[in-house]
Every structure is written in structure tokens, then in C-alpha cells.
Length: 283
View 1 (cartoon, rainbow, N blue to C red):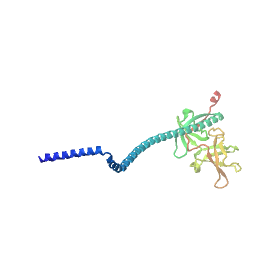
View 2: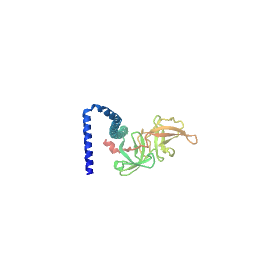
View 3: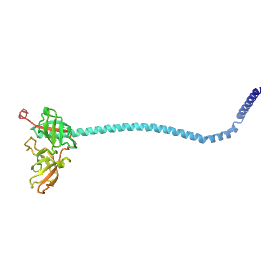
View 4: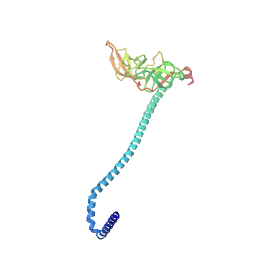
């Protein structure tokens, strides 16, 4: 009973307070302005902080979204750059092959007694230089032992063995290689051969047997066409004189020859084969 009375009393007090509050609010709304001002003053810094935090979150989200977009764009551009690099490399490769082909065609016009067989290098001996290497042309293509081998840049070497579909070539920088050559400016005949002392540098040696020979650095050296063992057209560029040295006894001289062909980066060559009389008549 006492509990019900207490509960009833609290309900009455609460109701009266609500009625008073409503009355005061409706009658004196303007008089509560000071309370609203205090309330707003207290909450303003917090409101400002929350607004700034919201703006910061929005900017952060926007930043990461833009960063993701830029990252994708960079990846796309990087991929395009790599593709362009590959295309440029391919174009440079084709340009080089085209230049070599043009030079070879000029040779074809000049050396009408020979046929031309193009070949790819498919293997080489150990080392940084193409001293001895294998090509994908053989007797099935008309290639024979001792056929001279060239590129559009100049003389390479000769075939030392020919199989059905492949052949082995020895280059002029190999220690076991030698070819009759001459100075382009004077026609003096010498022998250009590989030398163990210079083989590691991709160079050759030419002994100067006549002390009166007029020879200087930069002079061009070409095939003489006087080879007994295998026919080589006269006038194919071998290289140029890089240096002239005295022999150990001091009585003679020899020249170091810089080949016209880059024996570090060979990939294609041309084999020259001598035309038969029957072919010449037919043409």
C-alpha cells in the first residue's frame, strides 16, 4: 500500500514539473535565449572538430581513390613503354638486316661468278667471340667445304665442314685461319691470319714482309682473290689497320687488323658458292 502511494506521488510530481516546463517554455521562449547561446558556445568547438574530421576523412578517401587511379594509369603507361621499346628493338633489328641485305645485293652485282646462300648462326664454340660457329645451311643448299662466308659488312671466314643441313665455319680471327689479302690503296699482297695474342680481342695479324711497304693506321685491307685452296672474290673488305708494331727482334713489322665484321654479335651470314660452267651458260 505504501509502495503504491509512493509511486502515485512520484507520478504526480513528474506531471506537475512537465506542466510547469511547458508553461514556462510557451510563455518565456525569448528568455531562454541566453541558455541556447551558452549551449551553442560549448558545443561549437566540438562541432568544428567533427566537421574538420569529416572533411579530413573525405579528403583521405578521395586521395586514396585518386592514388589508386594514378597507379593503374602508371602501370598502363609502363606497359606501353615496354611495348614501344620492344617495337624499337625489332625495328632496329630489321633495319640492320635490311642494310646488310642491301650491301649483299651490291656484292651480288659485283661478283657474278658466285651464288649466295643466306644462313642463320645456330651454335658457336665457347667464348665471347664467334671464332668457330655452326650455320643452318649445308650440302642440301649447295654449301661445300671451303666456301667463303661474308656479311654485308665484310669477310667472315670459310666453311670447314659441310653436313646435309648444317655447316661449320671458321672465322678470320681464329688462330687456325689465314687468307690472302691486300692493301686497298696500293694493292700490296699479304696474309691475314688469326693470332693467339689478339684472338681474345677479336683482332687479326698481318705480317709485313717488305720493309719498304707504305702502310699506315687506318688503311683498309681486302681480299686479294689469290687464294689457292678456295676461291674468294677479290675486293671484299676484311678490315682496317688498327696498329703497326715491330717484331721482337726489331727487324720486321706487323700490323694488327681490326675486322670490319663484329665477331661478338653475329647472327646471320652469307655463304658464297662458285657457279658451275653449266649455270653460267644457262644464265
